[in-house]
Amino acid sequence: MINIAYAMGGPGGGAEQGGGFASLIPLIIMFAIFYFLLIRPQQKKAKEHRDLLNNLKKGDRILTNGGFHARIISLDENTMTVELADKVQVKMSRGYVAGLLTAHGDVKLESK
Image (cartoon, rainbow, N blue to C red; front, side):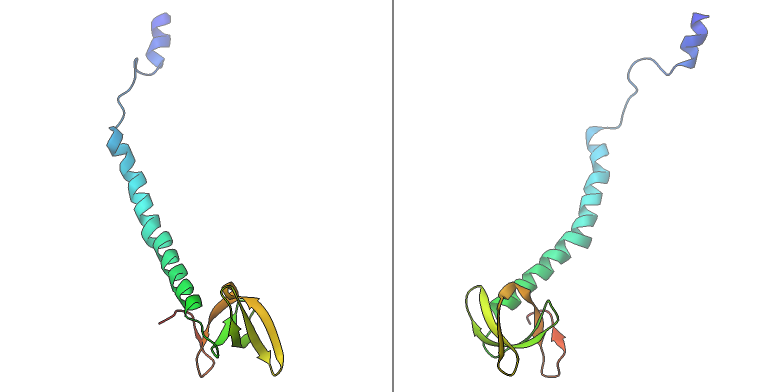
């Protein structure tokens, strides 16, 4: 009777597992996929936006994150004054600029 119970159990002792490095290969591949598909493009876009904010100058026409089309009147290090309409000036943070407007009113999101 005791022999039948042991026969139904798994093999005795520790079953041999895959090597240490072999079990890390899928994890490394997943990280590489995430890096090239998610992390790297996000860093590139953030760098382009940072360059866009650093290259702003007086007179540029911009699109804000709120959807307003405005013209830059003056710039400080962190803030700027923009004109939304005739004699309507608003002070805002530089970080809320979504992109530059071209002469035709199209949005140029990167700074090239």
